[in-house]
Image 1 (cartoon, rainbow, N blue to C red):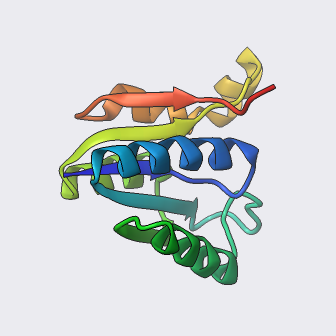
Image 2: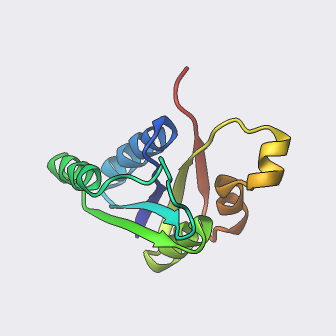
Length: 130
């Protein structure tokens, strides 16, 4: 059993990671961090650098968590998160959400919305404080 967090290298991903880590610590369960980007993206500011992922992993392990990090280039980010949850038999997926305009959702879609709709376990959507 595990908790999966859809992590992005921004304040939304940080909020999701903080919530997921707190829950994993409380439940004494594995934390699976998924930081993925589309293979077609030339630049994705939400895809963390390798050094940042290593530091993140080290920090979580130092906090006493059992951590697995998936840092991959994929065809579909939402699908990668849901697949990780299925493979890890997740009891929960945590995802950060941001306000998007209706046009933004139409043109770009919403990874969080797809995860919520396609996941086979509960999904907790969180947003940064303030």
